[in-house]
Amino acid sequence: MRAARWTSAIAALTLAVATGCDDGGRGGAAASSPAAPPGMAAYYSQKPQWTSCGGGMECTHVKVPLDYARPSQGEISLALIRMPAEDKKARIGSLLTNPGGPGGSGVDFVRQTGRSFGDELRRRFDIVGFDPRGVGGSAPIRCMTGPQLDRFFATDASPDDQSELDTLASESKQFADACRTKAARELPYVGTVSAARDMDVIRAALGDQKLSYYGASYGTYLGAEYANQFPTKIHSLALDGAIDPRTSSTDMLVEQAKGFETALRAFAADCAKQSDCPLGTDQDAAVTKVGDLLRQIDRTPLRNTRDSRQVTESWATMGIATALYAKETWPFLRQALSAAQTRGDGTLLLALADQMVERKQDGTYSNQTDANMAVNCVDKPNPPDVPSYKKAADQAAKASPRFGPFVVWGGLPCVYWPVQTKRKPQAITAKGAPPILVIGTLRDPATPYKWAQGLASQLASGELLTLDGDGHTAYLQGNTCITTAVDDYLITGTPPRKGTVCH
Image (cartoon, rainbow, N blue to C red; front, side):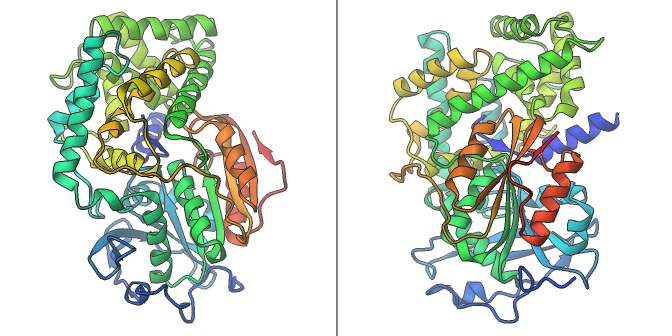
């Protein structure tokens, strides 16, 4: 739950449930690339070879240095995908995208959702996705086996006594130790600062003078970091479901837990109006019943008809949280809660949770979880010990009784992480950048609206666009007002009218 992302897995689930001109020199291909940073000429002059990879998509790889402080001492390969612009004559350039995470595959994101981008964007941009370093097809960090991750996710992440806390600490330490053993060389270099520098190499390799970018969730932090390093290399930057860079690692978890509580209340209010709601007709009582169910599962795990796993409180909480990412999955959550309440069957809750962590039916996982932890643990300073996490978990429990401890304790492996940073969270101003569009959703479960307000206010050229709605992020959710505003901005670089709120 340390993840903050617009996940393509959730997108696929949402779809399944729902269906039960000339660029004026703004962002187009450069006639000649600007001078590369020292020691980086070979990287900036790459000419990637694109090959068909199905579905009208093209794929390639771009080389970047493992360590930017020593660019000649080793390189890694980043996986890219693009959906070519539909109108070659009107093509502006490339729109680089990131779905969040950290750990989300940008290649999967474009393959699964590229055609959901606005009509005019698809006509005028190559929609490009990339797997950030350490993710998917880009020198992936892999630490844990499938059975190890099954045990890690099943572990009680809201410990009620010292024994449960000791078990949680042991599992968290094993996670960190596995990464130390299997990925020691890469761990120091997977942070967001390096990934943002990769984006500029990608920009040059794509032949664009300036970057056009859509980033969701964690992708907003990545985009803001790019703006911080390369403010004059931007054409347009849309940051959707924003993270506030000033937020500490534990404060981020506490605020995220509050966001899920807000989303749960919104779900409960809607559920109370539905004929198939298993929680009754009163919002407050419905929320209380969810808490009661989770406590019952803590005592007696639910059965599961898909495989041999028991559906523990942690799996069930993750399943509920997953469905809160998109309003379109609320009917599925009603079914899952009904099955759990009436039949003791957690199969549907587990299916939701498996979507969140990208667990496949054969018991294997993508490397999203390993990469997510690796980036989060190195990006910001972490609490030094278990008591520090307990203090934050207790704080979160008061503000978010259903999700607080579960979300906060999810960051515990960082206490034992082999690579630590002293780089404290700080505001990003990106002085000198053109207007940057920050998009926030009022009842976003994973990236609270206050973070969008915070990022927009600290960016020297930040402009805030608001969706009065539910679910994680605003774009790609079918809201015409948001789609039009974001598309117009990405194409022209001109943000919508100040104070715009979409409904």
